[in-house]
Image 1 (cartoon, one colour):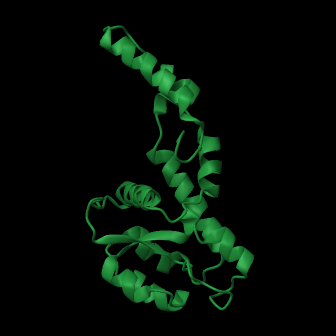
Image 2 (image 1 turned 90 degrees about the vertical axis):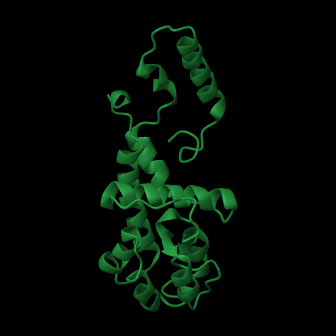
Length: 187
């Protein structure tokens, strides 16, 4: 919530964690509310998540894989091994898309391609076959996936454009808010 999605400076977070760790090592009582200063509210987290982009780096690929696999487990009770190379990150709107791909102009492509609403998990072989195909063609590969987060794209979206990416990202944000919640700090 704080670092990855919120993009906040970890210095304050480190101070709080050190303080709590010190209490634990000294066998003193601590309260989970000691973490309150670095706990991003649900509303702020959902807003931040709804706008989040993950540029194409190996660290971000791992983060996206983690977020989407946790969403898969939360919603569908389907465990995905993060260390497995079976799943890769699929850009629904391809990274190499041009204005001939779907209903996107170049500004929309630039704003949308790295948003998590445009990313999904897809088996490596299916991802290779989906490549830069059109959205209707990609849907046939998504339907074959064992990942429900991906398969459901074919159910809920008949077209793919900037509004659909925003909609999917908002839905993912709602799930993420529940997944990464500390109930005692939501008061």
